Image (tube, rainbow, N blue to C red):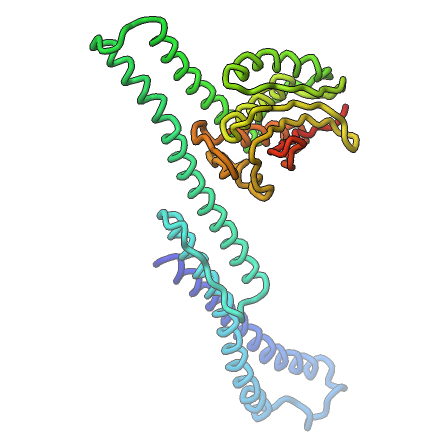
Length: 352
């Protein structure tokens, strides 16, 4: 016998049996009670008031319709309870078999607790389906992002083996760049995954941010100048309790994001205080983007649709990494129109 019919039969039998037993207890209990009273306390009743066979028959005739009505009411109530439970059992079995679109149904006459149970079950099933869809999209995106550098590496290495490409410093440097791209992609994926699961470990310390940002800017300046981009700094001497390596990673991601997608001539890095918070701003003089795009762009593998030129290179993980690092510090990422007319991203931390 299936679970569905076992549950239905047990509930129906239990409620019907409880009704019948209650009626019989009332019927025989009344008869026995009066019999005991007349036996042991005869002064309370005359002979005319004793319980006769006719009285017993009348009482039985009165009790029998009540039992039938009560049994029918119990049956209807049991059906109201069993129907959504059957739907829950069927939907759970379909989900177990891989159909994540299965949902339970509770009609308008279902008891409140049962309807709440069905609603919670459906919410859980919807979340499970959404997570499954996101995981499939995530896996497809990872495979897509890994395919390009791996294909280049495979083609170049095979070409060197076949002596089509020379085995020289230029070729090896190109291969190393592809390896660096893969390493950066893997690290970005790791950062986002750990942050979303709440396991992004931070090595927090009280740091002066200005020297670290100046050092990072010095490392980037030559590469940016070769691309025709000047780097401008406006740094206050502020302290914050942060993981400085993660902060550098976030700022580097914002600079690379501006370089790829804004086609700027100037990128600025500013450090200042606002409303008791430390703000690290990276802005550019590019075309900017719609402010409402930030929630979408901070999702993994999403690239922006800026109002100007856009480089479709990159993994689409940059702003996801920045958001993850900011939130791991108890801060957040904001977008606003920059002072140079382009986009400005504010990485906001608390002052410790």
